[in-house]
Structure formats: C-alpha cells, structure tokens
Length: 256
Image 1 (cartoon, rainbow, N blue to C red):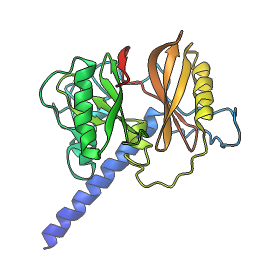
Image 2: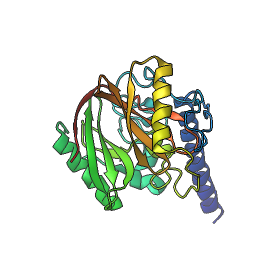
Image 3: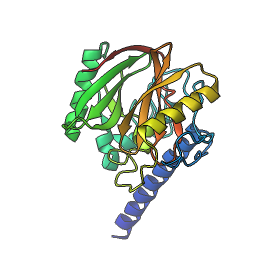
Image 4: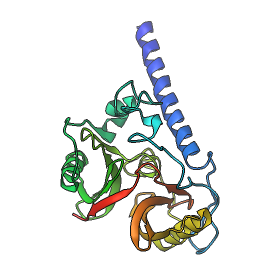
C-alpha cells in the first residue's frame, strides 16, 4: 500500500512539473515571460505592452517547436523519435492529440478530413483550413458556428493536435485555461488595433486582418499587400500578442 501511494504521489508530482514546465516554456515563447500590458475594454487605442514574439522568432527548421518533440529528436515533453508530446497522448491531455494514420497529408481536403476526425471527438466541425510550408492548420467550430479552438495537422503522418501557443495556453473552453472565469476586456475591434500596432512596432510591413473570436482570445491573419502571410493572436483579457511563428510560409486556404 505504501509503495502504491508513493508511486501515485510521484506521478502527480511529475504531471504538475510537466504542466509548470509547459507554462514556463510558453512564457519564454511570448517574450521572456513578459505578460504585456492590460488593455481595458473601455480604452480603445491604448498602447499594448511589449509582450509577444517577433515574427522572426520561433523554430527555423523541422515541423514544430523543439519543446514538442518530433522527428527531429526528443523535446521537452516528448519521447525520442515521436511526433506527439508524451503527456498529450494519454491521461488528462489525451483529448488534445489524435495519432496519425501513417498517410502523408498533401492537400487541403486531406487536412480537412484529418481535422474533422479530431473534431468528431469533441463534437465540433472543421471550418477554415490553411496550408503552410511546415504544417496544416484548421479552425474548429461548434455546431452553431462559434469558433471553438485551433488545431495543427502533421503533413508527414496525419497526426492532429490542439495548436500550441494561444489555443493551448489561453483557450478557456478547450485548452489549459478550461473553466477560467477571466473577464473579456478586449473587443474584436480593439484586438485588431492592438495587433496592428504591434506589427507596426515590429517593423514587419504587415497589417492585421479581421479578428476571429475564440474562447479567451482572438486570432487574426497577418497580411502583406492584402495577401495572407501568417497569423497572430491577442489575449481577450490582457491584450497580449502571440505571433504564430511555427507555420512557415503560407501556401493555400479553404473556407470549407
């Protein structure tokens, strides 16, 4: 009995350590842990704080960030040679990941099929699907058309996971902040203004598109001369910006 209790305590400690490490890595990814300025919902145009990752930051090779493991080798939370994080294939995070079927994903239709296979587990449906040079991305919606969360599809074997970054760390319905009562203090219009100001401050020459509202945050396309280049997210409570630096170059999109 004592041994059993010890094993249970050890497992709980490891799970907590993993969750804390994940949060620490995420903090580093968005500007060294700087939480950014709080943007009151009544103060449109307030200058956002310096939180956020510059568009030049993030992984420069491989399919995704090293902290998630992958074919590039073991990551912070994954085992050697495995694409999916060890924590995310089972236990409390099991609903965040769908194992691949071994088939390459090369088209938007194929990516949509894989995203829908994942969405079915959550009672959702795949909406907008995008292809980038490193991965496929899909928005998942409720049956009523409300934005629910975002997922990534691995082009190598069709594995699907909740997108790292805002979808995992900020989402209050399908992410690590599930059940959070955080107040929405930033409107969609303010989120776009914050994103635009942040992009201007980075000297990217990019502009921000319309803001899609997800639980706890907004996601916006970044544009150059009206053409999509990537995306970023804005926290609906703090106004913090998180640039999606893991996609690579934009290739194509399907609205579904």
